[in-house]
Length: 525
Ligand SMILES: NC(=O)C1=CN([C@@H]2O[C@H](COP(=O)(O)OP(=O)(O)OC[C@H]3O[C@@H](n4cnc5c(N)ncnc54)[C@H](O)[C@@H]3O)[C@@H](O)[C@H]2O)C=CC1
Ligand SMILES: O=C(O)CCC(=O)C(=O)O
Image 1: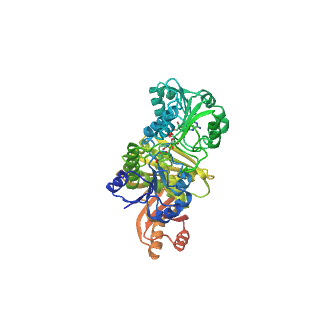
Image 2: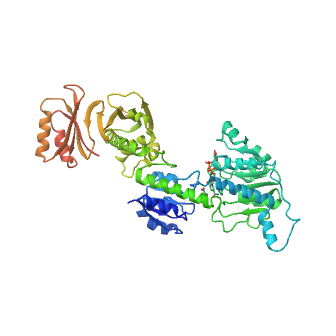
Image 3: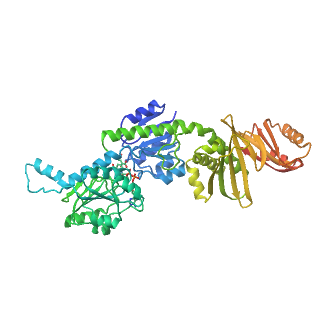
């Protein structure tokens, strides 16, 4: 039974769903990285929010880990390249907390406009400072969105309801989408100079880090108010402090900080500054949404192989997964076969699908081919890290669909390119279920690829099969299945036979010494 660890505080529905789906679950929160490292080894799944840091060090100790599920959006606390290299799927829940976070940005905008936290503190201190707290109206003001994705577009919708004019800087926002969400697409400089309020809604990337740098902050309109409910690191906090002190920036509200938890900051106590402790996603509704979603997604993956919202693997719905499962088994076997047989450096891999296979999602099939192929050289390869490793090796990977049906109702062909030319193998599914090899390097042969096998290329001459059978009998090697194929009568022929024990070097030498043998190899599936 797969085991899941919930290592950050999460709505109890997550644990409930894991149990209902037949998984064992432990909730152990508040551990130090060292303590987590000590226990992670037995878990197949790790469910987190933002506190747990999934580092290369933790992943090294996570010897059973198959999936990390982030109950939330940002995955900057997960080292995705390191997880991919280890074959661990990383999933998030991209929509469950977006409304809540957008509402927090709007709440902070109101709080800045009317200085609500200061007014509250002053009133409760018995001061009744009615003349101190002069606010500004939101109506007709310009709101500048940096990032107009899920959350940014919800903020735009709410702001338009407040009769604000919304402008947006987002290099990936199409003009059509800008019209659809009712914003004016502008350059960053344009936004900085026009916005009365600026709100950030991008992920933290190399391009967005420090997007509100000292230089860019200096370009803002005097009296601007700034909100960040996205990620610390988007704003130069030291420059922001100086501009608040000078009065150029009238107010700033940060939910997120460069260093979290932010228990100390030069910004604390600055007039016009408001902060919340990364509360953007903290509503009951959002936490229920993300907990349910992450648990369902992780349980799907661990029980059916279904993949949703993964950041390092193509999606595969829970309905698709069972249909694709036999294809992935076939693809892995074909990948493994070419990996074992092809000599010389492989530069390209083409995966072709014919007939029924052509109607399927080819990404997982290709990943399985690559996993089978690369596993010949490393047993830590799986479907998650195989495409990543293939890219690292500079392999040119292609997918080709042929709608036509050939001799088989469904067919997957794998062709590898080497310096000596291309070599291909093909297979089908018998009864839509059982993988069967049907073509090997241009020769038709029907064989199940299972367990240890002996592969022989020979001249097609009378008496050869008898000699091979006798040799194996004398060597006490039991034959499970025997498959033959030939290019043409009297030409190159192949023998593929399954044997009960792996082929030893001694047996291989004796097979190679038989008359008419061109080459022989032991294979394993
Ligand atoms: N404070 C909190 O508790 C929460 C924070 N977040 C954070 O909010 C941020 C936004 O989340 P979503 O809207 O769901 O993400 P999203 O991926 O839907 O939208 C991000 C937008 O940023 C844009 N973008 C990317 N690079 C850009 C650049 N260089 N300049 C301008 N725009 C750029 C993208 O095109 C995209 O439209 C994320 O960082 C997420 O982690 C999300 C939920 C809760
Ligand atoms: O889980 C949380 O409280 C933080 C949410 C967040 O930052 C995100 O989803 O990106």
